[in-house]
Amino acid sequence: MSIVIDINNLNKCYGSFKALEDISFQVKKGQIFGYVGPNGAGKTTTIKIILGLMKPTSGKVNILGGNTFPDTHESFELRSKIGAILDFNGLINDWSGLDNLIFWAGLYNINKENAFSLAKKLIKLVKLEDWEDINVFKYSNGMQKRLSLAKSLISKSRNINRG
Image 1 (spheres, rainbow, N blue to C red):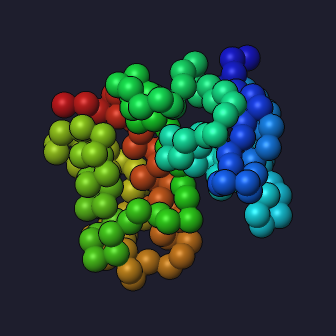
Image 2: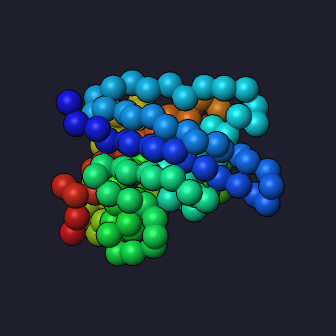
Image 3: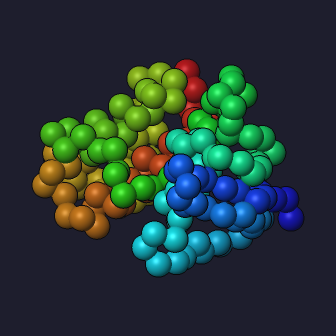
């Protein structure tokens, strides 16, 4: 089974404060991996580094066979293959669920026609068809999580839905 996340001796320091100290783990393709710990343990910092949102102080981060840092065309392409759901869901509350997904698909360079088709498929997948034209601020928290899941799947679908 291939390794999709390989973290070795990851460190993140803010001055003298060590947010992460020598974190190492691997996640294999198809594996369900839980990363748990108390508040302040460094879970969010680790995830931000994996996603390429934050630069590590030291250590190796290999995702899907590549590195998310330094910033290069290759690392940008690698990061564009990663989908995630974070505390901040990135949804625009005054837009419908469908419009949100079309917008995010556009950020992955999916043309408008394919973005619409993909958004419809994802809306159906997360069972929000009856709500696709309703503004997100009217969604329950659970519905917003489902829409966020659909949004995170756009990166997985982008290669088959390019225009």
